[in-house]
Length: 177
Image 1 (tube, rainbow, N blue to C red):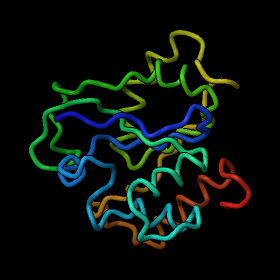
Image 2: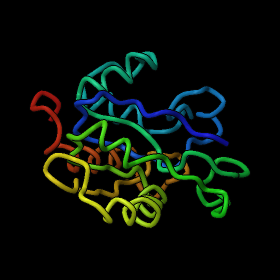
Image 3: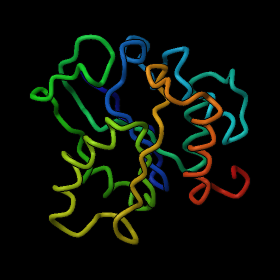
Image 4: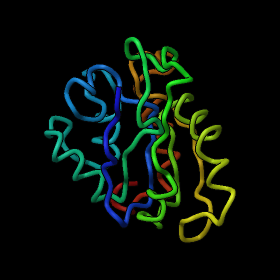
């Protein structure tokens, strides 16, 4: 399976990273398409736009707020939608060096769950640290946030929303805080 291109403008300050789109997202051709995933409701609340907005309006609201959206994994083999089912030997990572050169203002990388963070730390960071970090101001903050996936039931919606709000507040425009 193959992931999506990033949703990003050149002036993005925050990069939200998932691991690899789930089955519902791949079938729909859009990020976080599972109806019980909390990603879009959390960002609707954080950025003050209607939760029922269509996908184009949602992605425009993210990019207008300086938020980019992507995944660590470009392609892999996985049965089902769970990160735990990804065949580690099949993983191909996205081109982060190129992404950061094209988006030099990234100040924060917010990982949507533990799998995204582990993959980024183990498969991406070592390569980026072998040369000067390609963003203005050096290496961005790297945050692990609770997964918005319905499979992550350890925290309820209010807890997930509070964690995302607290972590991203320093990086969002004042109107979105």
